[in-house]
Image (cartoon, rainbow over the protein chains, first blue to last red):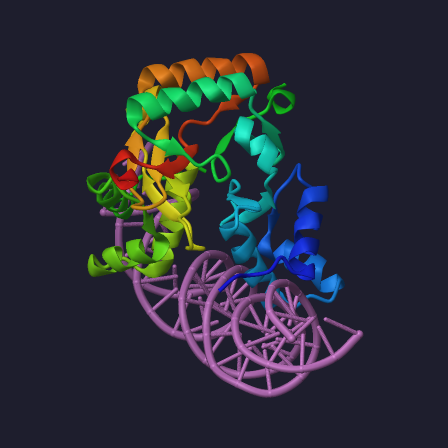
Length: 130
Length: 130
DNA sequence: ATCGGATTTGCGAATAATTCGCAAATCTTT
DNA sequence: AAAGATTTGCGAATTATTCGCAAATCCGAT
């Protein structure tokens, strides 16, 4: 019933971690991992496992129907939400103080507890606004 | 170059509007629309069009790899963000005051402007918490 | 270090989801 | 009502994702 953080999973996660500023589709990840001798089906299974275990998160992208995956930094997720830019696809972290204020607002008024690993705020970043 | 809000699109949108408290997969929508004589390919094309025109938004759901679509209420989107429950898939709106505070925090500190039609906060709603 | 039972992987085929091409039907403006 | 542009239906082509099962790995207890 237990499950393992296997070599493949560690490697997939490592790939996303070293590229944590952008998200990848299952296909892109499968191609990357294929070069390292990992089968396509394992990639799908590992993505599902990593997501279920809170190691990665999903997002979607303008005009693309696929789901994109990106590395989740547990420490950072405890303090701030993700902001991903629809233009350039890159992710930054929201200010921790503002995040905290917002979470308590939501918990208090709406009785809703936010999943910070999964939630992504979409919009346009400062760089792309110009 | 212009494009039309056709009968089919209006009807698809109407279906999502009358069921605006939950999201539907393309497949579910295709089935619903098929009963009304709409082809599957038109459903996909119409979903893309409606999304591009800001009439509907996407979300994803635990354990499901498909993309789900739901009605966007323009008026409400101006004032509050969506909160969708990962358990039951239903959507509620965040308190407008809290939303406003949060948006200005983000704009100020992070220089990021949030797309309120696209953004969805995931978590667990008050009802499902029990 | 090795053994054994549980979990994961590769492979290739099966399913499911989404897109395409093109002629016919609709739509909006005139 | 006519013309030109956009949308639709149909069915086939593509893509994406999942499955089944034997072989390979993994990890905890020897």
